[in-house]
Length: 433
Image (tube, rainbow, N blue to C red; front, side):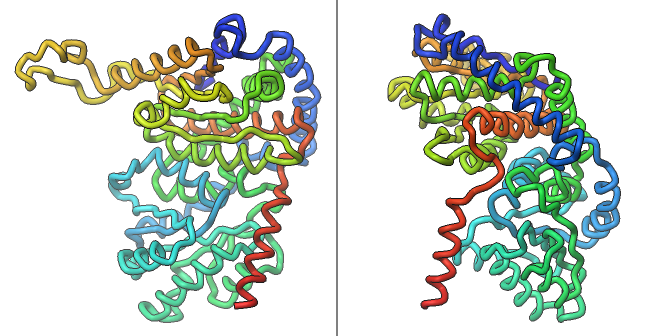
């Protein structure tokens, strides 16, 4: 497995009685067994297409002509989507671009996710529109934010390159139904890629929704899926829930919420390349489980930086959180620290000859230990390295953990009925204006 899940700091006997009891945990594991059986059935009969994606390769091959063409023609790519249509792609893109530019020979990929008038205007002013491709993503094809953004950029290109050239600068990803995005694509002649209607947005990262931006950035999409496949196969082949890492995580989270008054779940990776993963996880956990009075509040944090902003609350505030720290084994990695430049200051001797990776890993381990000493249930996920395979494994782990937690809570992990009320009201307000 590309990661190791360490849970010993989650139990009462190891963190001064504040964690989960072994009996409650074992009961939750046993209750997760039918959920694993359901996953096996869904995989076998194709009920849940998400579970078929790790083995799929034909769709990746079909994307190659578009990828090669756009990488040659465009300096920038803009992904127009919101929520699950964007966050998974962002989590993958961070492997290639941590904010200082993409790898040589690849376009800069922007995710214009949030709907903001000033942000949209700034993008219009800054982007080299004649050398930019646009990917509009909406599973339903009726997402108001995505449609509005698409129409704005269509209008801008209309004035720059003319009608005939627009078709080669846009692609839509939407389901096979008569919807506004598909009709818009037909009107302007740009291609439509099929979004599987049985894969919800927040579970779509392993589909072409996430794979197309990844391929444009030069990432190995097959390795991403292979990593996901390792986790899936572990679950499908597990003799018991205790042998399936996502089931262990789900059992811990639910047992802590029920028996230890845990109301929040903090995901804190110690790597810039995993920061967007935490944003993706936040939507996945919240929208899948927050139903019928159930669910814990997902909180994203980033180490080491949030040791200087949130850790005081975590250590000395309410003991109502379950912590997951993701620690890459980065000892010896990164630039080396030369304290000789400080004139031999003895106060810096502990840094001499160390690397940035040494310091980051030491701080992560210290945070995990300190949280546990304060009675905070803390899980650690250790990675040998951060690459396509390990990120694919983490993505599948958290998706399966979420689905299994929903099984334990008795809620549907794939719908979001409360969200639809706000969408309906927003359209009414526009109609009344």
